Length: 265
Ligand code: CO8
Image 1 (cartoon, rainbow, N blue to C red):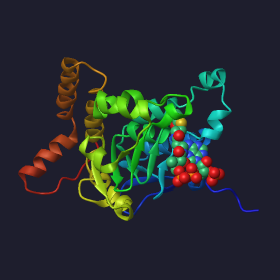
Image 2: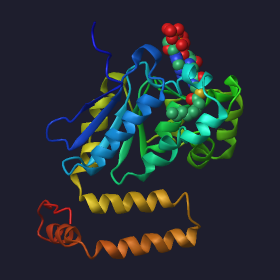
Image 3: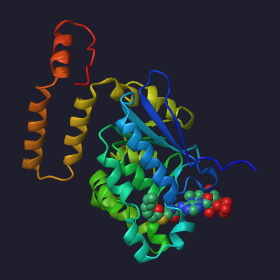
Image 4: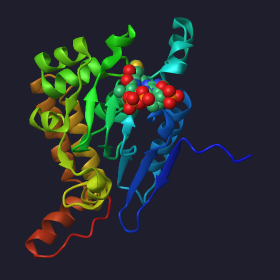
């Protein structure tokens, strides 16, 4: 008998300092079983601690990023078991807790928990065939991994409410116009672009790690804090950058008209 296919595949393209995590349950459109989510989170945790990695891309296949929670598994769960396990908490709260940029590269369906996974990432790149939606209402449930909160913040109440109450999907063109996603590429180019194109993952991974982490923290806190508290946090992180070797290196390199050599310190 052949061993079961791994639920996730990882790759680290040479010289990219980017870890690519591919969700790998193609027969069920990458439905997010608990086992897959646990593996995804442990891969993210290792990448976050790996000094060679500066950014992480999560992707699926051309048909699906992920078509949601595994409905077969979902149907077998009871309230006490999901409550005790903290089912889904790793998606909604775990992913934003990593220091390094985590990017979703979305081809095909990003539905339910699959869309919530993308929303928990730091930014989303998509292909022209991507479809985003929160169809939980059709199953007699509601989004449970951050969807109701993050979608409102991403595209505003009217569009988010419409999507959540109807289960309607949004195309990548609409998503780009709504500010939900940052970039769109043809399906066959998406992953390569997400890693290598100008100003995408490899670029993020090429900058000073602590500086990128501080920028990420400041942006993520915009959803949590009042404007005045957010501005105070930003200022304090900004002042903190002046204590780093990389602030000295970045400004000196600019003045000397050379490429900075980051110390990650
Ligand atoms: N779970 C389990 N199996 C799935 C799922 C899923 N979410 N989605 C698709 N599959 C399976 C199908 O059952 C089918 O299996 P089989 O070949 O054995 O019948 C196979 O994948 C291929 O799917 P289809 O034949 O349906 O493919 P189509 O191209 O005809 O349709 C669709 C594609 C429209 C995406 C359709 O598959 C669909 O509607 N899927 C369900 C989408 C959905 O409702 N998702 C929301 C799930 S609820 C949820 O996510 C709660 C949020 C909790 C957060 C979770 C974080 C971990």
